[in-house]
Amino acid sequence: MKHILLIFLDGIGLGDDDPANNPFAAANTPTLTALTNGKRWLRGIGKQVSERAVLIPTDPRVGIPGKPQSASGQAMILTGRPVPVLIGEHYGPRPNPPIRALLAEDNFFKQVTARGMSAALLEAYPPRFHDAINSGKRLRSSYQQALFEAGLPLFDEKAIYTGDALAVDWTGEGWRSELGYTDSPVYSPYDAGVKMVELSRRYHFSFFSHWMTDVIGHRGTISDGVRVLELFDEVMRGTLDTWRDEEGLIIVTSDHGNLEDISHTKHTENDVPTVVIGLGKENFTDGLTTLADIVPRMSAYLFS
Image (cartoon, rainbow, N blue to C red):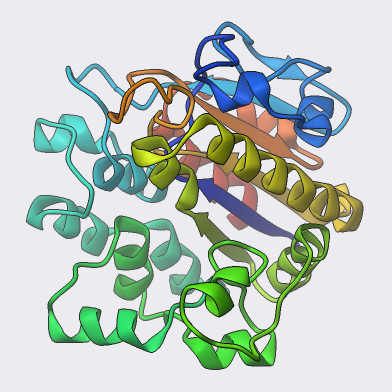
């Protein structure tokens, strides 16, 4: 079954070659740099075509002044529309009524299910998160709202225990250390990458969101940033060892810059990296310039 796995890393951009402030310039990430001809994911990297991947610096700004934000950026990734242009601003962190209306009108989860195909968000959330959503005390993020509009479930702790979903930190350590689930599964980063691919094979389209990169960008240290990137590098090692390029496409992208400049707590206006892995990667990335270009290419790839 031809399928797409979209790995969304919240808040990563292409920043300066500054190891004091940019974790991408300081971390040891051999798996990531192997995808980009040995080059670190930094400003000026340009388009990189390697044996397994294509990296395209991607515009999250779409001509709208100000710093790109999570809700409008995520909505662009999942609607294929220049959301900040349509609503007149960058907006976040969670979607306002105009963004929710755009997600309800159309998004890629809805496109997939409308064709009788399968889709899922691969991470699970604890009961208190579901309670906050259901009570109206918390708004869904744009990608969670897109899932909801398609009538698809947001996984809970049962899926963690049955192995049908992963934690947002990949390994599941946070479910034990932060949430008190002393017997919940814990994976090595490598095994989490293997597991993510295995789960993705159940669906035509799967989406995994990792938001800790954005949290660290807002209030973490360079050491925190290095740690999370080195963990992701090991996750990707397991992912790439398991993925067969002929089975589909892996897409790694982000909604805005943040983590790449720890010298402040704000978002950046930098391009974000979009990395595409698998057969068809060259056609997919041809002409891709903004986050709004991803959905039309996913549609052409998956529905043709």
